[in-house]
Every structure is written in structure tokens, then in C-alpha cells.
Image 1 (cartoon, rainbow, N blue to C red):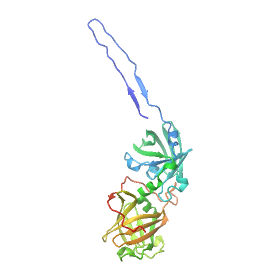
Image 2 (cartoon, one colour):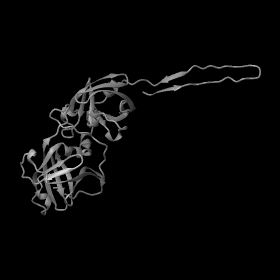
Image 3 (tube, one colour):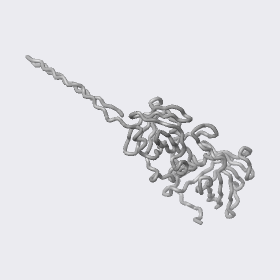
Image 4 (cartoon, rainbow, N blue to C red):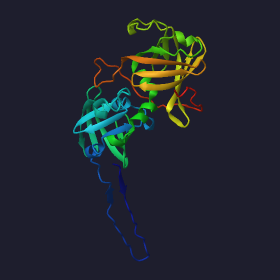
Length: 303
């Protein structure tokens, strides 16, 4: 914790016939130190508020995590949206170990290596994790498992959910709906900066897909409807497509195309699990982001 040093200097006054000197010793006041290990162990898991991060550096294992847990010397993290709330009984996967020393912790991450980090208590359930080497702070909010809203985290990070599969394969097209160009697209792929689509036949191996179209995409929040998202696909070679985005489960999405009144279902293939080591896994980093708000109402039939 930060310390404050107060020094009081008093000078005597010279009179015509006498001299008085008053000496007051320095008073050193220090705030009580924090037991970092006890503080971090007081909650089951800590949500990493990535948008609150301060500084130009990076702590990689916090940058990629949605939640972290400090349990009996083990560092555990939810690095994926797919399976969040179920993987590791809700806590995630083991990614390293730690030990505390007064107001700091020493972390040995399986992939990212060794860190010594300072811990500051901001309020009853918020801590600041500070890396003095990069002058960077992460802010974590503490929760017990029984009152953590995994659904909110899932829907608030749907852009990452879309990126956690190598491809989304179309598995259903409703009979109802007018013909449109999107009927021919059978695969979608979402990366952080762009999307791609393919008209290859269903069942084609992922490594044999030819990506026919490319463009930018955006996920939108909907005013007064937390569970509804919309998705726009801005093709480089043609006009935009607009969909209502519904999550069926953590491997299946439904896209409703209001202009044609067609319902499509896509299933994820090639799950990208962000593990504790780079072997057989893909790396990803979260960035500061906020979905833009769209003022629309659901247009898909309730049935």
C-alpha cells in the first residue's frame, strides 16, 4: 500500500533578548499492509474488467482471461467463453501457481512465466493488480460462484464466442423465407478484425475450405434486451447483411435474416481452446471494447 510521510517543522522566533527553538520529531505514518494471499483467496473467482485496465503494458495471462481464481496456491482461469460456467466446476483450467508475500504475489504461469505483482484493495470486492515492470494495472471484481452471472459474461462477450471456432457450418435453413444470396453460404469464420464465408458443400473439411467472401463484422447490443444481439456482415464485394443473433447452446447459433425472413442455424467446428500451454492450442488476447448499441426490436417470430 502507499505510504505517507508527514513532516512538521516549527521554527523558533527571534525576540530582541531571547531565542526559542522547538524541535518536533518526524512522524512516519504507514497504512496497514495487505495480506495479498488472503485477499485473493477470499472470493471463488475474480472477473477481469478488461476495459478498466490502465497503462500501456500487458500481463498476458490476465489479458486473455475472463476470470481468474487463486485457490490454495493454484492459479485457475476461464480463458474461453465456450464452456464458461461448467469447465472446472465454473472456475476454468489450471494455468499455473502462486504464493503471497505481504502485499504482493509471485505468479509462475505455465505459458507466460514469472511475475511479481502488487495487490491493492480498492473496495470490498475490487482489487488492483499492478505490474511495476510495465507500469500496468488490472482491476478484478470478486465473486462467489453462487452469485456470479455467467450468462451475462457469455452474452457480453459474444464476439469472442464467435472467434472460438475455426468455422461455423450451416446445418439448417428454414423453408420459410425468400431467396437471397446468403442461402448459398455454408461456412462462416470470425477473426478479431474480419470475417470470411464459403459456399463449399456442407461437410467439407475445414482445411479444404475455400473462403469466397471477406469483410468486416460487428456485434451490437440491443437496448432493453440483454439476451438479444444483432450481427452485421459488411462484405467487401457486395452489400451488407443484417441478422438477429441467437445462441442455442455453446456450439450452435441461430441467425435470423429479417429482410428475407429466413432462419439459419450454424454449428461450430474446430474448437479453439485457450489452454495453459501453447501445445495444441491457439492464443488470444482480450482488448478494450464495447459493443455499439442498436435501437431495434425483435422481428423473429416467437415460435
